[in-house]
Length: 122
Ligand SMILES: [Zn+2]
Ligand SMILES: [Zn+2]
Image 1 (cartoon, rainbow, N blue to C red):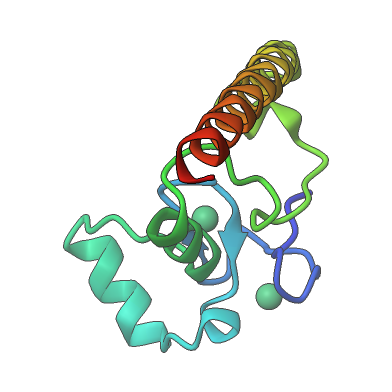
Image 2: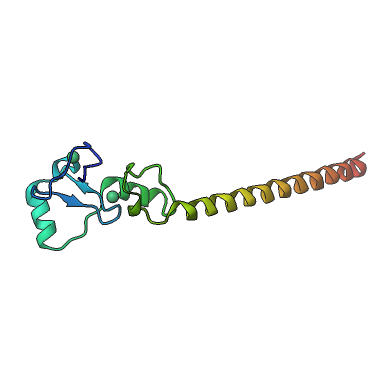
């Protein structure tokens, strides 16, 4: 059974529904403020439709913003699996560690410069 992420009620294939081109979720037309005619038009014209959630998150961040996407039990819908995500996150940690090392380095350098400045001005 597929449920609409907005009202979390089941979407019957027999009734008019919309599939998001990005997250592949099924939506009730009324939940995304579309009329049945709009849906008919979209389907007959073979137009791709993207839900508000995806449109929003695509505008804000093109990359990995999962916080905006509706929580789903179908993990197969995700763009990449959790092992990929874990790898990316752990490499981010590495980058952060490197970054703080660099910050320390820069701080030490600027302290040295301060000492030099004081020598010249005094
Ligand atoms: Zn709904
Ligand atoms: Zn979507």
